[in-house]
Image 1 (tube, helix red, strand yellow):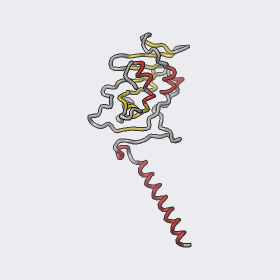
Image 2 (cartoon, one colour; image 1 turned 45 degrees about the horizontal axis):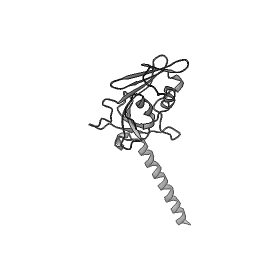
Image 3 (tube, helix red, strand yellow; image 1 turned 180 degrees about the horizontal axis):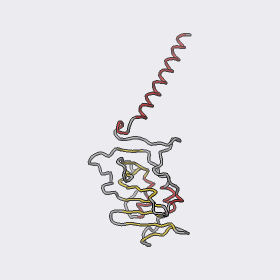
Image 4 (cartoon, one colour; image 1 turned 135 degrees about the horizontal axis):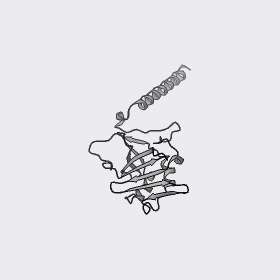
Length: 179
């Protein structure tokens, strides 16, 4: 009987030790993991980049080093400036998707690695009716696996990776290469 009790005690001690190790790993900074971490909300989903609702968006501005497209929400629909630009870009669909943008990977920038962000291929800005910025994001190159894209929130030091589908429509609207 005491051998069974010793076995259960050993199993309990191992479980406690594993829990403490996981807690210590979670508390460490991203630099302890080579600058890489996963960010999740309480439900286990990757954390949202922004905290705004699509209904708040009144303007979408897409800017490349050579061109700018401005979309403004009207009473009925979104309009583009210049008017001929952005044909086929559905601002309402984009805003609905972008308001839920999530990033589950964060990297510390490595010297000499531009990530397609020096300069950014595209800057996305979403503003409310008063002109206040709801979201701003610099979009860079595809990651090597082709499933994500390097991005940077202006003012943040770290580089984020978001799913590539979140940037397909604005890249296409600006006639940038996007698989």
